Length: 384
Image (cartoon, rainbow, N blue to C red; front, side):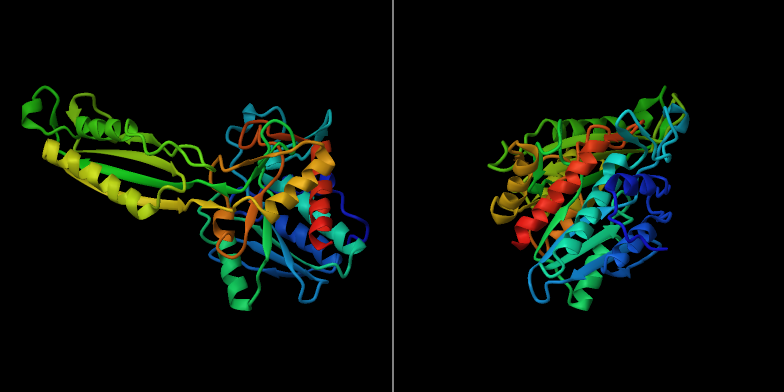
């Protein structure tokens, strides 16, 4: 099956939405993309690892010239309670100028837009330069065998990118109002206090770990980490859970566990943050005479692509197509840009993120078409 005609980003988005690719299921999404890219002359390679499916596609029209990269993902978060939706979350239907379904915003429409922009560009500029497209099925999951696997394969094959644009939904209120030039780091700490279980009527015979954890997380929550930097907002620590796994109201639990997530800016690194968390943990142990274990998980380190040629290029293309100047931002959560920054400068730009991960996720049809046009403009300016 081939597609000789120009690929429409709206119809391609609808086809992708109809594939129920809840992470890490591929569900046919990469096959759809591979068919269209190979038909346009891209060399495609499936890079599957540990049950995660990924796609690498490259157009070699530029010989040894610069390589422009796009990155995105086709996996989506679960729809949740399907009965709460106003429509089938995997319908891909179009109604009143909106395309509907899980992944419409995050980020099947973004993938469709840059795939279609790349195909249209190489058909009109067959010798302009090289384009590399990387699409993963693991961004919404553990993110250990998605873009990371693609980059590992690229290094082994001697492949690279000179710059990369990640098509995540970065716009806030209207298409083109925000471009991400970096992201805060994300570090999660897990604390487990070990007391002595007992009857709540005889607290003197037990050792309650709950007040100990409450003291620790209160101390953590009310300690400012910094005041922010030129390109980043102040770092934050948010307690995201306290649990005893205790179902009985008259039992003092043996253990109490807490989770805290730190989103940190470029004033910090993970080693110093972990040292600081460890010191707070030890202070609680000393104060209450109770053992507390700590574990930590790093989701991604803080990074910044300083304002310069790449962000200027993206901003100029947005200004040309949207008649507005976007704000350069480092807000929000993590994305696969945290991995790509290790091989080349990277920025993120895509659709409005208003309904991402929500019930009744949807995006305006005209925004998908405009996004394709902006991506095409970026390619045109980059290679000219």
